Image (tube, rainbow, N blue to C red; front, side, top):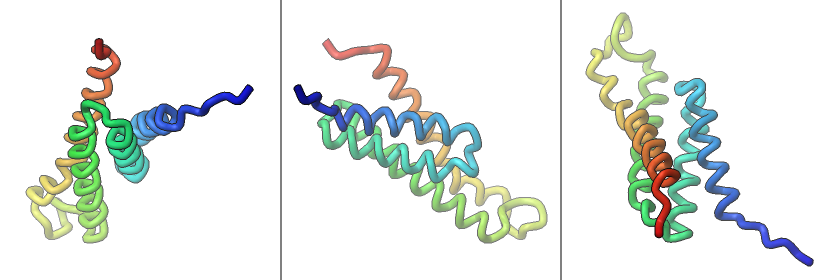
Length: 115
């Protein structure tokens, strides 16, 4: 008897684990968080989940925030002696906001099951 492997569920859990593990060190784990966020967005789009648009918007925000994080890091950071004002830090803001929205959505999904 063959067992059917539920790939969407495995990939969904992998995405959630990536989001949690990447949060241990948000700067170094930003690539892991971005991968997990994109994986969640893709799986929820594939399975026609009711929160797929929210996961997609969060994935895009994470990618934009992480891209600016790496860009500003390549310039030497912001504030202090770097020559860039603290306001440049606002470009990184979509990254933690989207991570928080994704975690809250995952908690909401876990607590409120569809009927």
